[in-house]
Image (cartoon, rainbow, N blue to C red):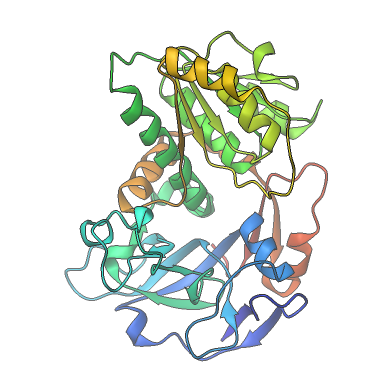
Length: 349
């Protein structure tokens, strides 16, 4: 079968390879891959900046944002033949640590977890893959190919859960939220904020085009300025860019008792002049909190699936700005001005 493989940490090694059928050791459920979403992590791996091959192997099968259809499943399993499913990315470490032992592998303490398509475990960008039923999440069949959005939605479902948990340390009745970044993660974070009944403000750089239109179509507010120019004292800020200046802007301008959730990964290597004392004083005296959030466990995938099932299908459809056939996978990496989410189509839906 065909699969997109790469030698991690070596740029220019990606190729559409002929690989063996997925091993039964990967799980009892056989899945036909329909589509794979492409994100910044994939670009990093393809550039040679990131990634780990399975132990004893040189090449890694790419792809972690998946959508597939079950071809085979044992009787009585949680998924059945014909179900549309998304594969969870992270696997618990083999020790396991205290968090992995209770299904909270997104909080792995010792770093020995594996991740499909990223770290030491083949991904989903192959014509077929195997998986255990407990790591396959069903999506509403009415979503069809839009189910490929579930993995990034799981990430923001976790972010909102973190915000709610921290906010609930006191009376928590949030009304306003700011999302920085109108990429796929930012837009999905805005979607979940609107579904929570919040007044949502999204900040990005584009003056016009698809991103501002998508924000406004949600009933949210779009801005190109600083957080202080969006709304006063937001209760929650979801930071989705990793841009260092925006990270500190969020910390400086969240409202009293508010929560900042950082989901973007900064590249590092830059210095900023900040008034650390003033920032510390504000955060302490106003009971403000900052939390980092990455990855997701099964609970977050299920929450994301519920959010997508409730979402307007035409809005989700616009989020997928381009679809690229598997044979032309390289085109998915050539970003175009109005790109939001680019998807590689592996098989017909």
